[in-house]
Image (cartoon, rainbow, N blue to C red; front, side):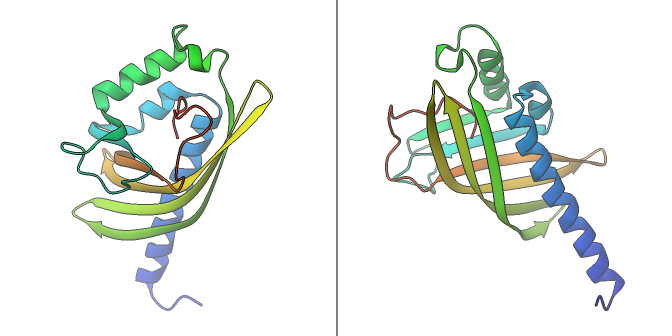
Length: 168
C-alpha cells in the first residue's frame, strides 16, 4: 500500500524509465535503427568496453566501441546500408532486460542500470551476449533521451570471431 504521493510519483517515474528501456530494446530488435538513434541527445556517448576492462577511461583505455553522437549516426548508416557485410542480411536479435534499477537522479539526469541478454540469430547460428547496461537518461523537451549508454559484457572473450557487429 502506498503511503504518500511521493511514493506514487516515484513508482510512476520508475515505470516510465522501465518502459523507455523496453521500447529501446524493441526498436533494436526490429532493426529500426534510425528511430533508435533519435532517442539520443546531441552530446550522447555509446560505449562498449573490452571484456577485460569493464570500467575504462575511454580517452585513455582501449574499448570495443566508443561513439559520440556523430559516430553513432555513421554506424547506424553503415548498418542500414549495403556495405556492412557482417550484417548483410541483417541478424535477427531478441533482447531480454531484467533487474532494472534506478540508481540515482541528479540535476535532471538519472542513471538506470539493468541486466541484458541479447540473442543474435544469423546463418543458422546463435550467439548470446550477456551483460549489464548503464544508461544515463535526460529529459529533453519533455521526452526521455539517452545521454550515455554503456553495454558491459560479462564474457571473458568474444567468440567465435572476436567482434560485435550488432548494436548491443
